[in-house]
Length: 121
Image (tube, rainbow, N blue to C red):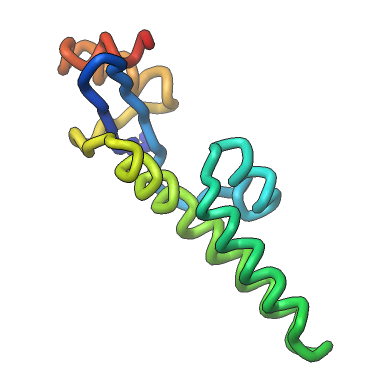
């Protein structure tokens, strides 16, 4: 079973988003592209600034530092997503479990029908 945090925004344009918990292999492997795909602009800016600082390091430290940056991005990618959703007006509504995102969404809608309107948006 996988865990997902539930984030909802109410108002004229309600929306509900699920963010998976745990390490993000796509973010680890494709860092900047993953950040772009999820529209995490400030996260991308921070990543590019750190990558530029790493490029200025002397030769023996550059590769380990770049690997460390990718590992940190994989570990904290979901936190960056949650932080961005909070900045966009979403509130954390709880946690839901499922084998995949679709099952977790079905469980969420059956347990909290009020959030279904944001899911369909």
